[in-house]
Length: 337
Image (tube, rainbow, N blue to C red; front, top):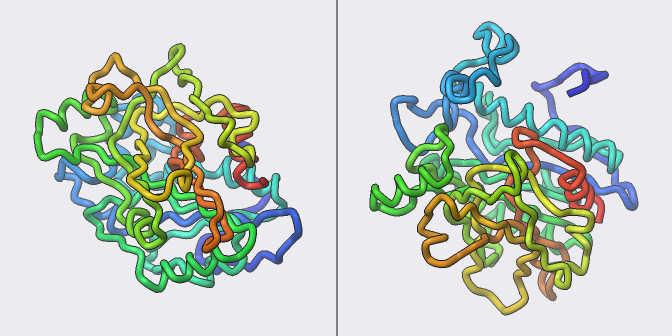
């Protein structure tokens, strides 16, 4: 990561971005309560993020440099792990700013200092493309209010708006502990427990917006060679807007959600990208005969909605899991088309 030319600011308010024809204003809304996530009891096995100490132990020596390992410079608790997300989103933010000419606004539902920012006109007024990252554990109780759902509906009534929903994985939903263990062995990530369920906020938002999709499982993608994810199965005939133009793969992440289409009018949800699953590692989903899972969806505008709705996991915008030209082409498409 190159050294930025300006100093960081934190304790300040967003400066509104003027509308610029042809240049989209992008905002990211992380739908978690930072205090609720950071304050989770590390003695609990399930439904929490790892502490930074656990991350360092499992991934050793990846984070043994002083900027991550020195407790005087980097938090070693769950809060430190949350900060890794922000580190890894910076390249996407910088890329988007360079591409659009506008800085990317990064919001949290409840931030480090306890300030709550609902999805309302303050967030939406100068936003053309809104990412909602569903990284909130279900147990923290984040729910979209009726007012937020109405605000998003009104915003999607504007021409050329774009909502990108990214509920994260749902590992261990089954009550059977042997099934949970099978899922754990499938994804193979020691930092993800037998049960880690995400996305209450995005689920409630999707319900309110009549988006007939549900995030399920945490599935390990197939690889074509070590560290290289298998190519997407892309339905280019349905991709009229070219969201996946110049794209062949996303980045590898060992536990991705399957975006299951649960109903709606035929054709209202277009599954544009499917990811082959690692069938060498058993999982109930693959044991049922499935060979791939839905990873990128598009809900085109309707008579009642002028804006697009896309669905893609938040890890696709994080460089914790690598980035190449194919992924950057996807970023460009989403923030420009």
